[in-house]
Length: 405
Image 1 (cartoon, rainbow, N blue to C red):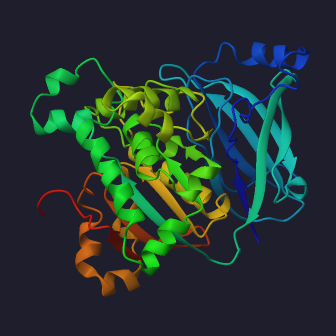
Image 2: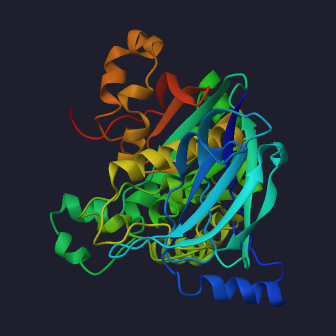
């Protein structure tokens, strides 16, 4: 009986959270005039208020989506307040400005009784009362029964950046971003495909083969790994969900975490780079998959001159957990991504007491050590009342941690 606002993923192009009534009509032109000077838009703050306008609970804020007039947040916000139907939900959308005060762009006030478990669009209005587009919201009860999932984490194969680090030749990488798999990395992905398709039967192998959803980071090395390693996996018949939340954590010096492609161009780039490393026939066969672009139509990466803050990472994990609990209907899900982000997902606060007792050595290493390239880690997890817990973990197909402890 609590209110959660879930800003749902809009999984097709031209279906972002802010939409004009028509791409050709006056509604679209009015919307464009509202947003065209706010390319650093922005974020939304949601607050429950009583009928007399007094705040109830704490305000909740989405992540910032920069340089777009059509932001997709995929934010799961726990309003932490009893969802009485006489309450109202205030929504305020701001731009994001480093040097000046953030501008309030548009607002909405929605009766809690209007919010449904099915996603609905609600109109936003500018300060002058004009049209400000729409926002998509869904209400989900916090008191839902606990949800159990099996997640299979796959770290990407070796990339050109990884090779340069090993060879101590990072100078060769200056001026380039989003480095693809090298020949070794493509071979690692092919070896993983062979491993899971020929593995000795076990419960974990069956669950891996039965996974219903594949979600990949948009970074080229991860998307290539998903396409090559999971070639022929039945889940790819439904496409690969390309999700910016799974990108690597950006450090000050992490040039390999800076993207260069948006939307469908992420898949185009993966194909082009595979063709360079292998050949056209190989690239065509592996990339013959629909890319479901969850949130990549606008800049999904952190700029090269910036880094991800602790708050950024916490919000990404929060929204990923909400997505996996409420927007994935498969008991098993494959996530293809990166070592640092996966280590943060396996942080100690996410490990259950049961797992800490049963496998203390593995539990101690998961938050600290990198998975090897193309390694597969099975996680049994529970989502309960807004919490995420790992109850068991196991490396599959002979994979494990990278290097020595």
